[in-house]
Length: 317
Image 1 (cartoon, rainbow, N blue to C red):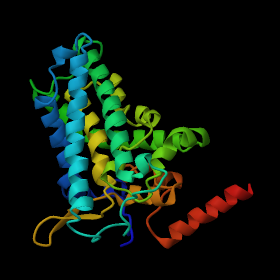
Image 2 (image 1 turned 135 degrees about the horizontal axis):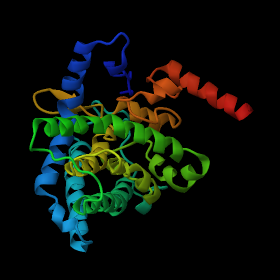
Image 3 (image 1 turned 90 degrees about the vertical axis):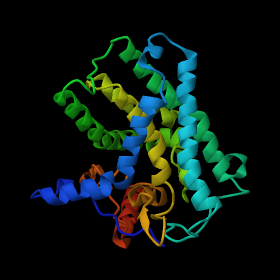
Image 4 (image 1 turned 60 degrees about the vertical axis):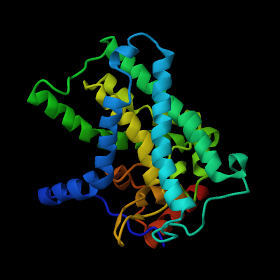
């Protein structure tokens, strides 16, 4: 199948459409992936992360625990999707953006194998750098060096934390657009981002298969809480969301077949178009900066023609 049409959420329609916004939030955003990443963050914070007191003084074991948690979660999510879609091939090429399977036996991937290359960069680099960012922020919280807001104790604090939980997604979208445009500058693309773009035909392990320099930029989102007062649980939520969600968005399948012919939303058409066409859709659809700044591709032939023409003008100039 092709990638298909990309539609933007009704959050920015003018005049506003409150019912359409609420329906999109519940049926498209929270169900099923948004809700899953929030649930994973809550579980990870409460049961899979050392206590905040463990980070009051630098402790190698606590950082190691974060790293091992990240590895286990990424294997469960990316590895599970890879097994279901690419090893078991449970739905064949149904709903697959590209009918080809992942590269084996040829470059430019490490080990001449796309999956092994992607697994290496994801587990060795992404999980490590995510753990270091999280440990740094939790150390700051444990030593009262930044302002925390408790998740419980009053309705106001709970509401504030719940609002910030949802705000993570648009904040992350803006952050991703900014660092992604930076990574597409000449030198940073050659030094770092080109490693991720080897994956034109993407799979679940492609999501955070990046150069360590790109991981330093991409996984720095928790630093926003240096200036935004928040409960420390949001650090773990942000870390796990940015580490795990690309496995689904890079799955290479538009829909996931579940049971009795039913399907649920799978990959991200918006970002898949970026991998295919390179210089478009730098952000995400939830904050359509690409639409506002002229780099939006909606999946149509006309949008591809506009990109080709823009490239010609850039070459001539």
